Image (cartoon, rainbow, N blue to C red; front, side, top):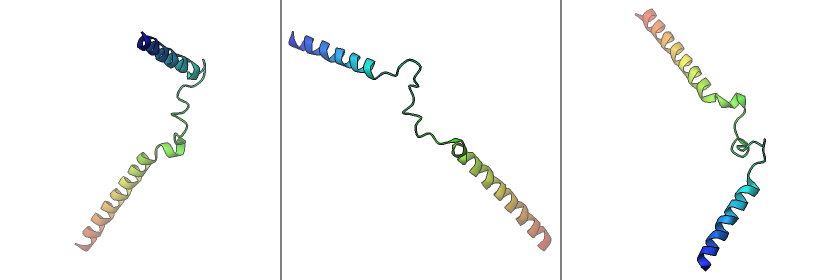
Length: 72
């Protein structure tokens, strides 16, 4: 009987904690998850780096082909 009452008390405490710490209506529930999200300029660095690297490789390839054609 004691374990049943203890179990009901634990479930009740959990429900009260969930209700107490739940976000209020209209409050953003993901506030803590999005707090450290990078700003817009930082959000797409990887894509910009890839495009820049690809352009440099294309330019280097064109320069190398031009140099080998001039030397031949």
